[in-house]
Image (cartoon, rainbow, N blue to C red):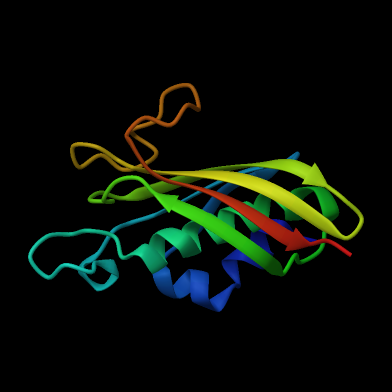
Length: 142
C-alpha cells in the first residue's frame, strides 16, 4: 500500500489541510496550517478542538498504517487539551502496541511559536513549540 498516496487522498484530511510529512516504522508526523476557517474564535486564530483531534487521529493512524500496510479504522481516541493552539499545528505519533486485532498509538500535538511553520520550529527532528494536546488512539488492525 502506498501510504503517502493513501493519506493524500483522504478527503476530510485534505479539506482541513492536514499533510502527513513522515510515515515509517511505527512513527508518523504531520502538520496543518491554521486558518480562520479552522478557528473557534473570530477575533484570534485558535484551533477548534475538532481540528486538533482530527490531526491527532490522522497522524496516529498513519503511524500504525506504516506497520500493518492497510487502513486502520479508529476504535477509540482519548485526547487531553493542554493549551490553545494559536499557530500552525504539528503532530508526532508513535505506536505503543501492534496487535493482530488492535493497535495503540500515542500522539503529541504542538503549536508552532512566533509565527514559524511547524517545520521551522523543529530542530534535529524534535518538536519545538507549545504542547497543546496529547492523545492515545486505538485502531482496528485485523
